[in-house]
Length: 415
Image (cartoon, rainbow, N blue to C red; front, side, top):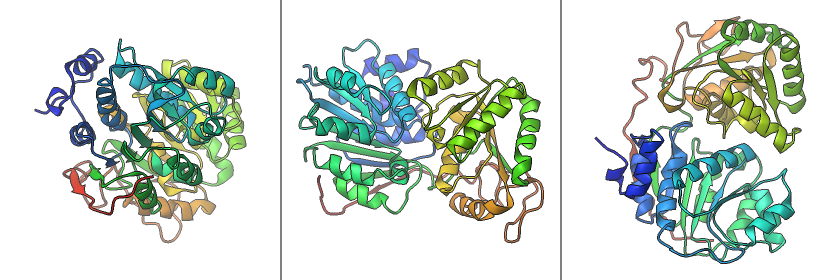
């Protein structure tokens, strides 16, 4: 049986994983960690909730432990770029857990916090920095930090950085990086622009793919309810009333819509909070902390929470509004059924959202079963609850393909 020690990880790191109850590596970890320890550039594609942070974080830490000296002032040895503050915080917490009692320092720079305080912390030099692209560029423009000594770069959830318009920021950051470095790119979906990012940042990468793009976890049971927009709130309350002791994550399309829905749920007696772009970072952190410890049972969010929330016992995800970007649906429902658990994803589809639903089903290569209502023309109803399998297959079985390892022998390009 494959274990973390057999992947080439140091005893100290393996012992820390054992103490945290993490004993068996996931498929993406099994295939990415040995390649990363060899110093290879990696393009990793895997479903949400499959342990991508450890897949890059553990070999990153092990290689950096070999330096044996402190980083120079204003320098960063390892850089992890993430699209949202929530994901950056999640990565930082995980990396610190992996480090245990190691003296290595992990910092975070994101918007919504004092840039002067961040600049002061970085002035002493940092082993690993987790950053959102915009704030990192602000610090680079101020000359508060340099990437001349950066030997390791990770792009996590690179597809969402494209969705959020970070492509220009990524190109600028590439210009600050040294040619000699190791780069790892991880994503759950693979949009067309990903090839451009790969060419700009990666050098002859190994591609590790453990699931087809757009495929959701096997243990997510899905259904869609066709309902008029004004009737969605009452239907949501009806569902939430059936599991008041379990955590539920509700996705709305807009910031104002999320806030309005949250206030309505609180007024109706539900323990609810919201996170979106109009909230301060402190408010967002408190809402997620309350959701994590169980004081809050219903978290209403925009797509800022589609990634970066790693709470194993989220039982239910509701797509109150369908996303305009179909890949975001995959990430939203990936907040449930994490770490091998089971989960339920329920989507509400108003008449004017039919085109979004078609696009979502095309990306996932399955048709979501109908829970209630009448599907519009062109949408094929399924009667049985479906999990992550293709239509016509047994739930959860035909989704298990062998991991693919393919070497990309394209021309060498370095930023």
